Image (cartoon, rainbow, N blue to C red; front, side, top):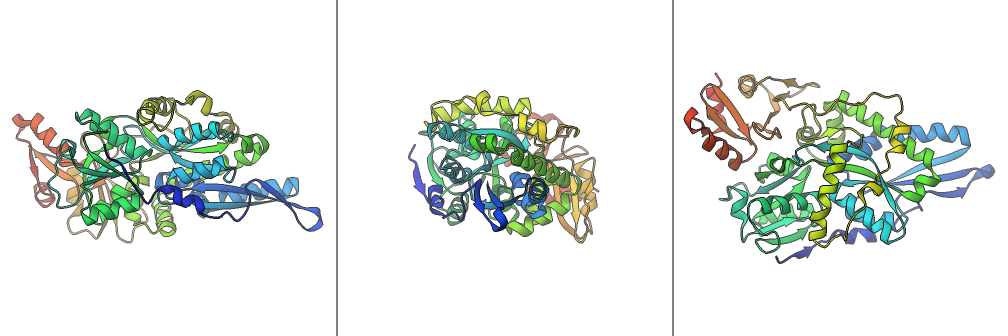
Length: 448
């Protein structure tokens, strides 16, 4: 494999920091000011309960204000926005970020770098997850002739090495019988650079994490080639904290986790309002935010460190070792569930993610409508002033835009798929039932 590093994330490390994290400064009348520095990824939208949405709601600041009223300290929050998890880890290991959020693969690198550089970190909560891996997707250009992952052999593929999306790409290629080191030409690029490269035709495919695949598909700049949920391996984003900060400012960390839980409650109770808020803050289309963060979205939001997520994290380690990105990771030693337990004591557990349902968002509406079947959704589209329509993949359950999905007619049933390969596989397995691939328009006509 030939790997070309273009626009590496490390350039972000040059960004100057205005204040030292967790620092104290003398103020009037001998008062003290403590600045807590939080690193987040505004456009990685399944981290919003620890970043973009949390910041806009002000819940962390409210918790700190209450603490300050008791202990006579003025607390301030320095929110620092990054494109990926790598620069957040670099700043944490330099002692300049206290709390950060990132994906599962970057979290493992965070754990290793922290130990190596004498700034150990701990994983303390989860933001959003998908139990099958649907948060990562491989996309191609809209007019691409590529139809399946097997078609990537010998092709140029953009991804962010060390990211969850890269992990998905490596595993998917291996399952397709392609050596991820020699079978493709991998370009290590920032998500935005990779998106531009795909549009320019300088790469054949792009493997990226939320929300890039959905955004590109929504804008007509890409189509899905591989649904990460086909791996059937959980993927998630989580919150990591410097161990020293967690020890010295245990109460402040609990304030953050309590605020994260409140932001999660808000998102789950008001998913449309939350999507609109995140869209306003990030510039992403609200329809794309809702695809991932909505009531039936690809991401499920829950701070709990679920056993299945921790098991998945352990399964990620060999992938990173094979890529020579880490020598090994003590996953159990990296996880600290106690701060979250203390912060959310007495609050009920969220239920596990339920199967996604077709969903319709009409223009001017603050609520969406859910349907039992894809056929019912298609019927509801007729004559409606549609803002967005979503439908789950018939096999993986990954939610996708109804007009971007690949449709299959089977008798009186209509099924949607994220990728052409998924639809073709279904048709091949159901030839006796007359299953066939149809256009979105034809599926709509058949729904009558």
